[in-house]
Length: 457
Image (cartoon, rainbow, N blue to C red):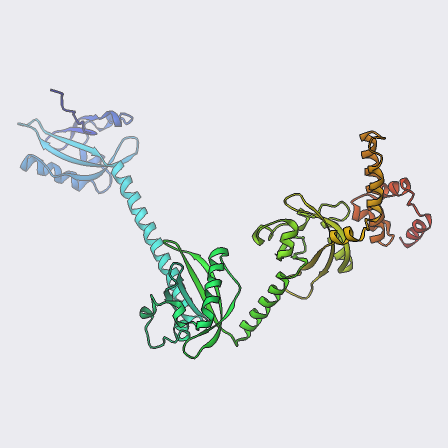
């Protein structure tokens, strides 16, 4: 038969009948402490604060009944450490004295502290949630707009504020009665299909443009806009109804109409901030850059797709900053699938609004050039290079091609800058000395213009 495991007390004190310590034994778990200084001292003296009365009771109880109840004290050790412990005293036979047996409660005390801290954290989080819920309720009920929360699964109303109840012609019902009601029941029959289509776009994209709907028996006009909100266990629609004759609604409607017109332009259009970051793009632009969704273009730099040297985003922004408008800016768009498209850009800088945006119209001119047969000087020069294949080495062909392209763009930059050498160097990202060297190499160094520019400086 296997031996039963034995449990050794953390502290064992042998006391005389007056409570003076005669022997002290520690368990291996507490072997780091030295208790030799306890011998010959009353147990009361070595206990921590408030522990003396409890020790007197345990000693008195052991004398009278032979054993004392368990009591917790903070036991002070010679090293200065105080450990929470639970003691009981047992009377030994005859006048042999009594035995005090102690158990270390430090682990229990730490668990209790963690439990209290966790409870306090939970209580703080609970009151924060209550505060958030209260604010939400105040904003929800006090809103002048009709706000309705609708299930995405069956379009039934989950919650509605007072304005929405009146708008849905349900002023006689309480909010609880309105919950579970089909939203489309209060929408005019001719508008229900439009509402379904809008909610389908909201489910797909997260939001959609406002639409005009008529609500209630009197068919009052309201502008409806919606958004998708994540909630347990899935998603819900947050729908806002604004009276169609309010100034805010009219402004939103006009803005939506303008955006809709821009989105249906046959030419690409983007709105940029001053750093060239795209803030709005229409479908024609997405087709140019071969991107499937607006979300992939918004926040990106237009320079990601303008790759032509000397006619890139930096050149475009520099011209807009200098002249406020740009017309017939010829460059190339490289799509995500590797297709290059020749385009002309017209752009203008908007001022006087809260955010200064740049409107950029991008027109595909590749088909026009192909049909007219006008390839321009660069195409003609590069065509002559193609005729040298087989007659010259690849290194010489590449060198000649680079020279022709470089000469073309130096000319273009010089024309864009109106002959100003300093501005031309800035457009090309060159120093003036490097520009002069290239002008001299390609025979573009007009001494009269140079002298004229020097006199202007």
